Length: 132
Image 1 (cartoon, rainbow, N blue to C red):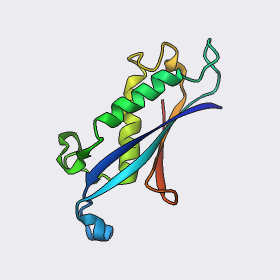
Image 2: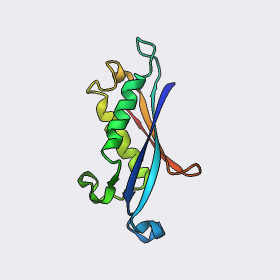
Image 3: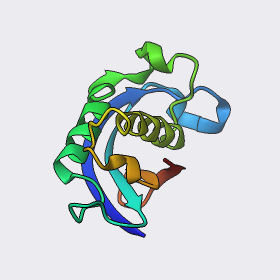
Image 4: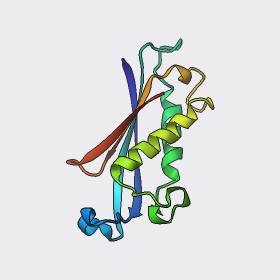
């Protein structure tokens, strides 16, 4: 399986309701390093997994919807607990929506899967993988 990864960052604020989250129940900030890895069994006719520029632009566009925002106030996320794991899936789903639109290139329909990893720090991260 071939893969291509692009990386970006996002800074958010949020609170995590529930005793299980301890002090993170209070409003706090987080800076995530976000990696999106695109995978396919065979390279496209141009010898690519996906256009790296298009992948970077798509990731930046998805993250722009959350960056410098208080996630507790983002209507689209209302009622969701915005854990690292949840955010991985949310970002992956938004990137997957870009495939049929051509935003990731004309051959992106041949992608097999997408993996999103959010690093909260150098010692803690979460990820989500979805088929395409």
